[in-house]
Amino acid sequence: MIEAENIVAQTAERIFADLADAQTINSDKKDSWKAPLWQALSEAGLPLSWVTEEYGGSGASLAEGFGVLSAAGRFAIGVPLAETMLAGWLLSQAKISCPAGEMTLAPAGPKDRITLNADGTLSGRARGIPFASEAKHIAVLAQGDGGKLSITLIEAAKCRIESSRNLGGDGNDTVTFDRVTPVAVKPAPDGFDLTALLLMGAVARGLQIAGSLETMLEISVRYSNERVAFEKKISKFQAVQHNLAKLAGESAAALAAATSAADAFATGASPDAAFLEAASAKIRCSEAAEKAAAIAHQVHGAIGFTIEHILHRYTLRALAWRDDFGSESYWAVELGKRVAANGADELWPLVASR
Figure 1 (tube, rainbow, N blue to C red):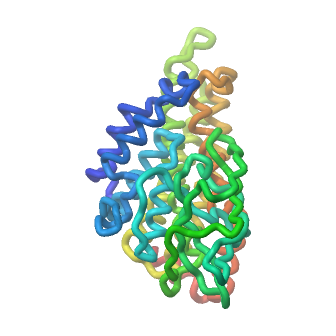
Figure 2: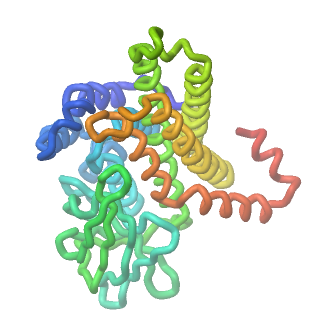
Figure 3: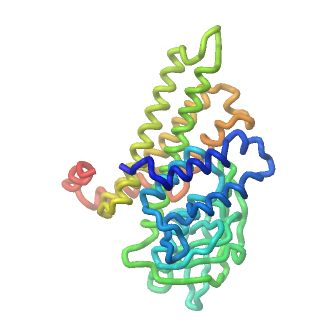
C-alpha cells in the first residue's frame, strides 16, 4: 500500500489546511482564495510532482504524487492540481519540458480522438476537459497517419473553448482544435496509448473520490454528535448509527480500492494487474460516491442541501469525478472484455496475485 505519510503529502496537507479551508472558500463568492493557493502549491513544486527536474518539475515519485491527490480529495479543492499533475506526467512520457502555470490534458474520455495532421497541426474536439478554461496549456495525446500516437503541448489560448461546469461547479469544458499548431510534438513511447492515459486518470480520480468520502464521513459523524432531536443527539438513534456505519464502509472500500490501484502503478505491476486494479478502483469508488453522498445528506437533513453548508463541496465533486477518464459503466465493460479475452483459467491467478 502507498505510504500515507510522506513529506510531499504532508506539505500538501499543510498548504490545504492553511489556504483551502472549506468554510472560508464557501463564503468567498469572488474566488479570491484560488491565486494564493495556486501560488503556494507552485512554490512547493506540487503541480509538477511527476516531472523530473530536467524537464521543469520537482521529481517526486508516483507514490508521493498519489499521496498529494488523496490530500486534495480530502479538501475537495477546486483548482486544476490533479489535471496539471496528469498533464505533466503525460508530457514526461515523451520527454517534453513542462511550462509553468495551470495545465489540463486531452482527451479525458474514451470516445474523443484528436488528429495530428500532416502539416503538424491538431484537429478535433474533446469533451469534458476539466479546467480547460482556466488552463494556460493543454497536454494532448494525438493520433497521426497510420494510427501513430504523439504527445503534444498546446497553448490553450489557441483553442476554441466552450465553458461548462460539472456538478461540483468546476470547469468541464469542450475544447475544439482547429488546425492548432503545437508548442512541442514528440512520438509517444512504444506501448503507450489512450487506455494507458485513461487508466492513470482513473487512478487519480479514484484517490480524489476516496479522499472526499473520508471527509464526508468525518463531517457527518461530527454533525450527528452535535445535532439534538427529541432531547438527545441524533448519533444515539439506531437508524443514524446504521447509516453512519454504511457510510464508513463505503469510505473504507473506496480507500482500499484506490490505494491498491495507486500502489500497483507505483510499484510497476504487470499491465494486466494494473488494468485490473485501476478499472476496479474507478468502478468501486464511483459506486461508493453515489451511496456515500446520499447517506451523508440524509444524516444532515435539510441543512446539508443548502449552499451555505460545506457538505456539497465534497458530495458534488465526488459525484462529478465519476465521469472523468471513463465512467464506471465504461470500465466495467472494458474489464469484462479483458477478463474474457484472457480466459477463465487466468482470472483467479490474476485476482489472487493482488
